[in-house]
Image (cartoon, rainbow, N blue to C red; front, side, top):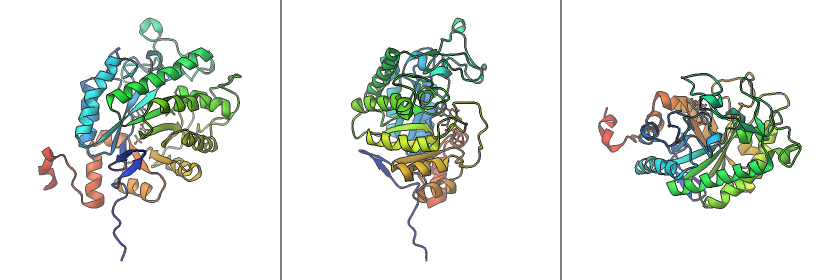
Length: 359
Ligand SMILES: Cc1cc2nc3c(=O)[nH]c(=O)nc-3n(C[C@H](O)[C@H](O)[C@H](O)COP(=O)(O)O)c2cc1C
């Protein structure tokens, strides 16, 4: 008889001093719903709050900018002002009140900044229309967007300081996790990839040069983020493009990041160039598995994980330590509660929903 070892998806995971009650987490998702002040509002409270009722072990906020010019769109949330921190606090408190943890994803979007909300327009917003000119490691445009200005070293130092200031505010808000967004073609990824970084100074050239900014941001953030609080990095494990960032680069960098205080690599892919990607069920899971095995660091898997049994298999087989869920939880905010019921007959509804358990 096969012993019942229970669900691994619904077993706790400890990183640093923090224990996540389960391993089914909410992936960061931009909502383009803040005003020009970047302060999260009732939309963000209800949107993120629904997942806290839904039984997840960790909610990550949308990509939240460390500076006004680091926003993807004029309607992104930020963490560069005290008023924004004050806006996040009740959301963090509500999530904690439901027994769930919450992390903030910090971003600078570099050459992909100043773009419109997807449902109101397409592409770049000109400065005359409320947008701004963009900055990047090299003056190389992303397809369909304008050529960015090349950052000077003092501007790079300013960006590191912006990440640190945002991390300090994350402490004030009570966030449990910081995730640095180094994926999907945003600024930190733009420095990593040879396709977007053709600098010849300390921040470009070889692997050490291209990874320098991310390593410096990690070290600087780690200094202000309590040692026991988990620090995640979301990475695009491959650019899926000739001459781009590779899985081997990701493994090498992940081991280095572990040694300077990163707790978990959140393994996504793509976004630096418009190239075909072989999208399919769980298509990025092999990246999380490879990084976990070869770099010896905890990983999360993301991308078309839609089914409870699939999620259970990923963590049970040691392919990743946790899964992140995106569109599946937008469709069904109680996805995690339903998965608990399916995988272990466990009813985890909020007490207020008690009647659901007996139905
Ligand atoms: C509406 C929406 C907004 C997103 N915004 C972000 C974001 O802010 N930061 C990020 O790293 N990924 C973002 N993503 C990507 C998701 O986090 C996730 O990696 C992707 O959707 C694949 O997972 P899924 O197949 O479970 O949806 C977004 C995805 C969606 C659907």
